[in-house]
Image 1 (cartoon, rainbow, N blue to C red):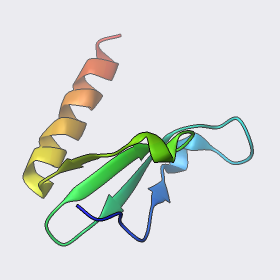
Image 2 (cartoon, one colour; image 1 turned 60 degrees about the vertical axis):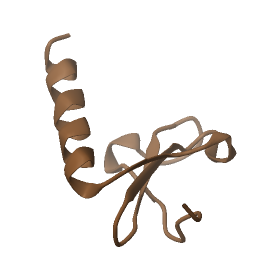
Image 3 (cartoon, rainbow, N blue to C red; image 1 turned 90 degrees about the vertical axis):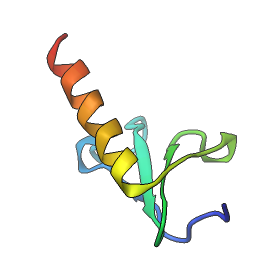
Amino acid sequence: MTTPDTWQKSSYSGSGDGNNCVEIANRRTRIAIRDSKAPAHGTLSFPPGTFTTFVETLKTAASLK
């Protein structure tokens, strides 16, 4: 996969230095995510349906804490 052109940081990450979060980039057939504090260290890439399942699983896990 080529590097997506437009990365978006979560609105939950806040602003300014020290607010690290994940970034998401939408492609036609894939959704990529990366660590905003270390973007050169790699990305995860999912088909859209699988990404939705991934996010829902993270939400469920977070609510169990």
